[in-house]
Length: 286
Ligand SMILES: C[S@@+](CC[C@H](N)C(=O)[O-])C[C@H]1O[C@@H](n2cnc3c(N)ncnc32)[C@H](O)[C@@H]1O
View 1 (spheres, rainbow, N blue to C red):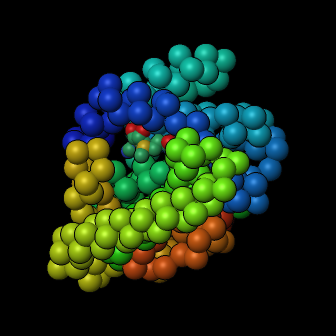
View 2 (cartoon, protein in one colour):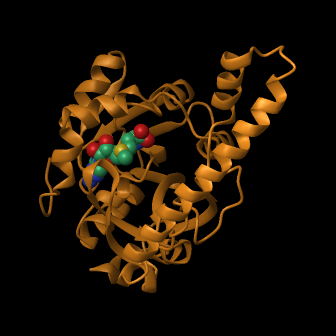
């Protein structure tokens, strides 16, 4: 496995905490389900890049004619091999896919912003060049990437938990159940609003003065997993960058789907690109 510069995020991804966290995930988001259902078809050869603990493996492998999960974190790959011993997993860096033949996949998926770990820009460029090389012409690339302009946090809470709590306090068939549920909901909404205001203020203070926010592209320290440097971008810059590597944009969808995406709210976007015939893409990217 080769890397241009040692990525400090690699140690974080190899840690037992993160490996077990990602291994415990077993769902698809509504946004992923919609895009996978729409753009991936049965029998495709699929490369699941930055596979992590295999969250997307059950869905993608059940669809694929050939499925390969790949990650640069050896611990993530061991966890996947333990969970899915009958499937193929490889310990590779997205910036060097030389172990895969040219035009060998119908689709490449890189879910939950794995692409944003790559540093410096040249590593990300190499990854996109490699994805284009291993994809068949008109192959599908689906990935998500952090939004450079996300500064506001929506208030959110789990209504099922409140219903559960109200049921536990007075019983779900009590006449007091509805009034209690309304009161709990009102209280929870007020707390959620306050929490979202505090989080938004903190984000505004941290992100608004950055070059990444102003230009719509750059690197930020993300609070996730104890602090990781991540690349962030806005959809028009992602499209421009990918066009240079021979990709054509098919769809952009906020990870917050089915809520309406908002540039200053949506945390990250999913992108669907199609790989065009090779035209020497990426020459202008160093
Ligand atoms: C946020 S996790 C997402 C894991 C999984 N895709 C999911 O959706 O649950 C990002 C994953 O990308 C992997 N990753 C980051 N940079 C990578 C690189 N340069 N090459 C391959 N994998 C990488 C990390 O090791 C980690 O497993």
